Image (cartoon, rainbow, N blue to C red; front, side, top):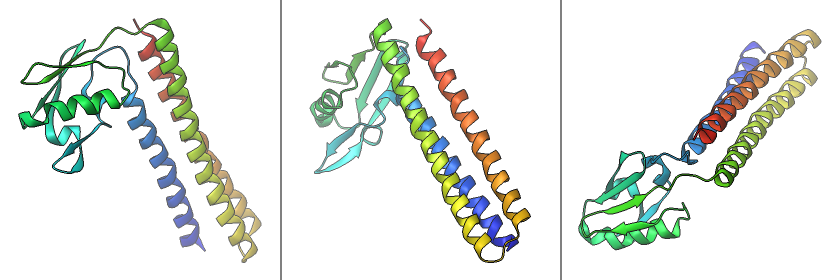
Length: 187
């Protein structure tokens, strides 16, 4: 019985942690007014008939706070990279100089900042849903064990432990979101 409970705890912890990891990755993609190569992390480029991540076919860098430069490993990819950036809706206007693709990151307006804060909060809600789903799954497994001869006290303690893990993860999500909000709103 103890091993089964431990397995339930581990699975719940793993699911909750993966929700947090996903949130952190999504928050990195949200613009904060500074140029960051991560802004282009989700872009796929057609490379010899297959789709490849931009970072695997080029060198992406941010030489200053307002510029992102993409230097392809093969010059024949310049137009494909330019097309992929335009179609990705990241809000950047690529300029091809024959050697590399250069993008100026415009300063964010107040309205855009509020939109990004809203987007960050939505990602936070998705993460909370993931954490709560992990809790619900664990509680369901504990209830099944209770029906199969797990004592009331052990079940109650297990449920309390799962709830504590859930509360801790929700608190972490809230902290990440408020931190990102401050970062976005900073001019």
